[in-house]
Length: 421
Image (cartoon, rainbow, N blue to C red; front, side, top):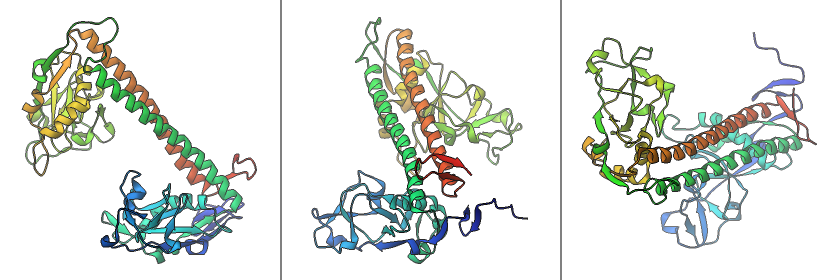
């Protein structure tokens, strides 16, 4: 038996919505204008920028230019709503508000012109974003990485339509959330830049901390630690989902600085004796050496003694400050060396001997090493706090979008204050 619909609501093609809302298709509420099929021979270094999918997704992407006259219907200006009807799901495929400059569309993008009597442009963008998953299901090539959707399929997609005033109130509420998220993104980027500059200064001795002196030392990794390999499971054996006393760390679990514990796999009890000597401990550092190279970090307490994949090494018996060494390994200087030293092949690899010969500079006193690592760790903690706030804001926006676009939360047209229905 279907759930009872609350008073004041109705069941429609888009689900349960308020009775005073309408349902209409994209073709009934907006026009979709296709771009031009420019040939490479028509590209130039001057004229109007040709807006391609690359330009929708990357503000730094270069433009090709069209120097001749264009049909005005294909002209795009700042604030126009665009829809990439072909591309990669989750990235290039979908709706965008064009930030500028003025340009001309290529053939893989629609310019969306809402009927202003029925649909506010800012609401059209939000509802497009909300229904992208539904549109993607109609796309050809859905099982491949690159897809496209027919204009006829797009035209027939249903939208929930409040009155124009409520549309604008919804758009304003979500725009405020976007501004909050954007502000946090900018602050995070700024803090990362500050941390990167601090690493360049503090890890090289260009900036000394008060109260410390003495010449810095230059040593290889093998002079301050041992580097040991991990181990794959015996042939024919597999990891298991069910927890045993033997967690197994894969490169896919590794993140810069630490471990993502959301999908840890385990070594069966009968297999553990065969690989028991290839484990990693709390005082060690891991470094990935196959596939994704140079991911370095520490393991959490609950994974102390976990088995380590053959695609990573552990740096152990560390005689300097462990975190100071970790930040050196995470620095641009070492990461650039890793990138240049990797072997060439189907799967890039980093030899153990290369890691042993990485050179670092370090203060003569452990206390100064620890003090530097503590400063950088505090910066990491601040970044983690900001990223948590940003992620919560993103989740809140998604929840708001779900509630607002189904009318479960209504907005006052005068004060835009939310009220639960």
